[in-house]
Image 1 (cartoon, rainbow, N blue to C red):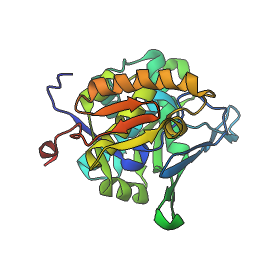
Image 2: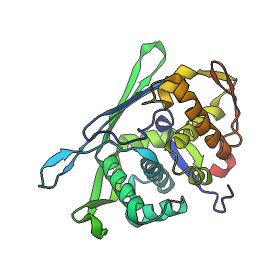
Image 3: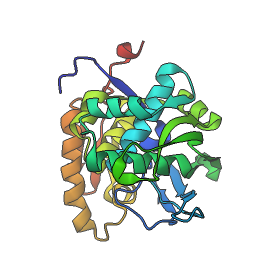
Image 4: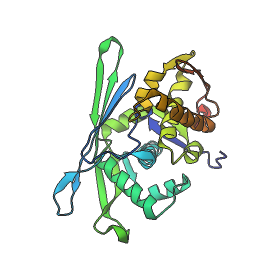
Length: 274
């Protein structure tokens, strides 16, 4: 876990409460996840098909999509600019995060960046008194696609630059959640552990007292696609242990009803951010 550069990344708090799917969905299928405070819907966009006609794309998924989202948000905050270079800069950052270059890994990154650039994301926020807040925005509202340099992917495109939407960039600047690069690198291939780590980074430091979270609520947020509770619990606990192994200041206990979250220091010291 030693991190010589002390790298810090940032995520919009909404992404710490509702995440992308772990596995590929059929092209054109919408993703929706509802948690205690938020509902996220992701609508896939369109992309050119083999004959030039526009065909449905797919929703981003898995660990690579999560890493690209982290890169986009961290870079935008660090540079205070909606314009984010991908291409070589993204590849270099992913290499620092332990992601191999070339081959299948490069193809996966290219595909997930393309999906993110074309999708529309809708956040519904549930507030006290039954009020609902709505943010209906693309994360990326403009992108420059360049021909791929991968000879095995003739005719394919790679997202070279992206511009975050003004609304999303404003939300990110108002509600950033800091995460530790070293922690992300250690769990880079496990999308479930990445989600739990981000959720703990968002929840724990803001607590003022021990807070229970039921197994039902945990399954709703982290168990999409898992039918039975007795199948969900062991998988979740394994991934929770992995997330807590890289967020050692996290104080979380378990009882028969679910988890108990305790006020904990954030994964990144506040003075580091100043």
